[in-house]
Image (tube, rainbow, N blue to C red):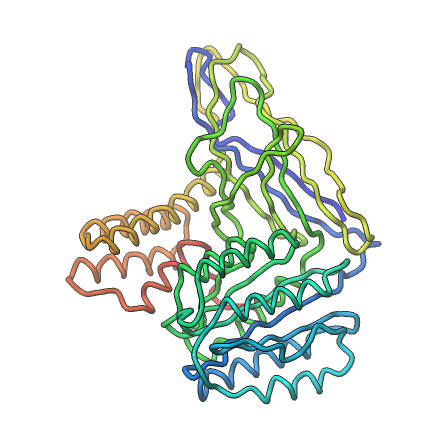
Amino acid sequence: MKVNLQPVLNDANLDAQQQSSQRQLAISISASAEPQDRTIPLNLCLILDHSGSMNGRPLETVKQAANRLVERLKPGDRLSVVAFDHRAKVLVPNQVIEDPEQIKRQINRLAADGGTAIDEGLRLGIEELAKGKKEMVSQAFLLTDGENEHGDNNRCLKFAQLAAGYNLTLNTLGFGDNWNQDVLEKIADAGLGSLSYIQKPEQAIDEFGRLFSRVQTVALTNAYLLFSLMPNVRLAELKPIAQVAPDTIELPIQKESDGRFAVRLGDLMKDAERVILANIYLGQLPEGKQPIANVQVRYDHPSQNQAGLFTPNIPVYANVVRVYQPDISPQVQQSILALAKYRQTQLAEAKLQQGDRSGAATMLQTAAKTALQMGDTNAATVLQTSATQLQSGQDLSESDRKKTRIVSKTILQDTPPK
């Protein structure tokens, strides 16, 4: 397995006369398979809401979706299933897949009842997932249709951060229109997974299948982007690092013992680009080709039972010129637009919460224009529709709010893969 690492500045040229310049550094990271690589077994945990509001078709389609995943698991893969209402229980303890039919029978026994305690489901799910994580790709699918009415949302976030520390990835799926997008997004972001929206029950099978296909492409785990900046180069003070593909996530940054910065990437997928965007400031530099940073990835290779591997250290250069002409990278401009779309939508949501309907509509229109610049027409349509509704004096429905959040974070696929 090979890690591809490519740093690119949004503008590779710097003005030698400028005392300070701002640049965006996009770092593209992906894994590519080699002929000798074997498939890494999966360690999957389904954390399923079976509260009273899931009664009828919602729970039946979720059980069907879960059973389809069981059928797709291979010998050597592991599975656990946790179910929660206002309490949580381990329905299927973490185990190697030997009797899929027995597991499906356990899932099919689930009945809808009670309230919702997401944090308890998350706690048990992380415990089960941690039991089988050695040399595996460990991911959880947390599905809920409601608020965490019997739980504590801060506790959810703490559990998500704990999962990240154990190198476990958390994906969240909001079912219907009454789930809390702030809570599910925070869990998915902390767990470096994805946030999905299942608007109608019949979409559950496709959405579970899409996520499962994504998990199957994971090649390397426990990956960190490491970088150092040269003297006279610094990170922006506010929100300096974000992931912009495949989903947009504001990423925390930590300092390593050797003084480098580290950003957790989690799982790396085969031939699927992960793009990180760093906002940097450069002081005045002498003319010529000047090194401004070094980037490297540390990762584990579970199929070869190897941990703490490193890519070569790659230097990043800027061309410092006396007669400045911009040298813009279209690829990095796309990344900048993706982050702008997300942040503009966030500002719109904040204004809406403050009662500033007009300000929210303006920001959503701005986000729609940004999406159009990117060529993301699906997002532009959703964002402009929401803006128009607010301008006409209507409230946004819960469904509209969910769609707005999802399109702000990612580029929608027209047809999810089976």
